[in-house]
Image 1 (cartoon, rainbow, N blue to C red):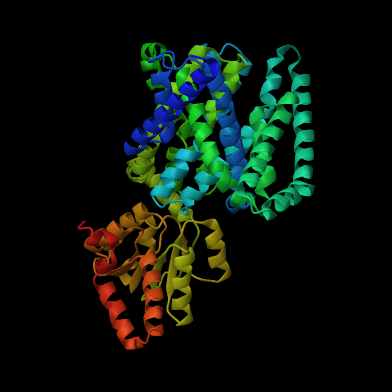
Image 2 (cartoon, rainbow, N blue to C red; image 1 turned 180 degrees about the vertical axis):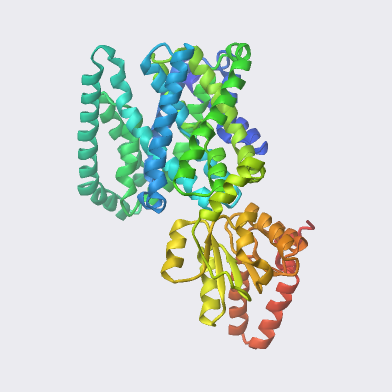
Length: 577
């Protein structure tokens, strides 16, 4: 078969098998990138041997890496980082630094790393967590706006930014005889490049993209974005820096313009297509014999990585003033190896910093940690609760809670307890305070506590679902409890604990999904509110009134739907579920 025909056949096989592998992984509830990895292994030289033009596929895979980093740069948001900037900057630097140093020391002492450079590279690889898997899991669980969700995303964003810096200095490490000078030159090149790139991005890119956008031709817009991404990546390569860093910087240049969202929307399908080639190409390098022969070692590395990384992350979050539960959940959510570690590992392998065997062990370890992450995040609240009940730890936490900030009169009674001071909780508190009712807020966000302090409202700083915190809320003397937490698991735990302390208490709960409505009602909530349904009811009520229905009739319709726990408008009820 001619070279061009063979390449097209190979490309078709890779794309088709990636689609199949990704579909199977998705159906099994796993990240699709694992499906790409396994399909690459299956069709590669160590599997069925279906691919003959491996080098050409690897070249296309490099384009996939460039688009991965480009999209990351476009998505990068300083606004998101500012929300929890202390833990994002200080915490992530501590986490990356401690993980890198500890891994370097352990690998050097154990003989797994043959040089200081290899030890630090392994540390950098293991220090990164998976933005894609963690964000997907948080989104599916409805926890992106929780305090632990914000902490995890902040640290992940900072890690992704650190990746660009690591990629900038990595090529310089190839000159061990003059390492200090090489690093200085690499950093100088990176600084000059960043400066020129951002100046170019500020003065030229906005007008260019505005001109292209005014043509209203989506093809021209996409071609310009692709040319910019690959062009900047090639410039960094010519400077002796990495293609990946150039693509990341190109994304940052686009991130600040008005057309950033449109650019991201256009490039995501291209990114995902080429990214599947990248992960499939990695899979082609996997030798199953090496993995099988070292399976016990890989399992040991998985345990060491996930436990060790959690142990490193937990005290950092704890020392930044967050609650014990938040620190446990966050540390168990960030204890995997990230998908961008594949990029670092591949660059390290190509620069001959790590051996093929080490590279394959890293791939196997990373794949397993990614599989285990959603499971760990699912059981993290339960694990945190069990750890908190261990006798010694329980007494220590009780002492800590007693020293936590608390602002409420000891004689408080006939009050309404509001758990959570986000948008929903804040609205409830304002309604009650405007009518002169006594309110007590339970919140674990320092920013929210500062607002409560300024408004001179009674508060308890801590996790609302903690029994130690609830004991201070005087629930037995309260009139009602409103649970407005963004975390479904914490909502259920708080409801159960509250009913144990005050069985007759009137409790209204915010539901996060349709199945939760029935579950929370059965648990004992007097009223369960689903925000999406409430918004729909208010809109529908307004339209009915516009069409001529009286306010009394509209009110009757809405009240009937609420009393029926939204059953008549739930989509699953009409499908027989």
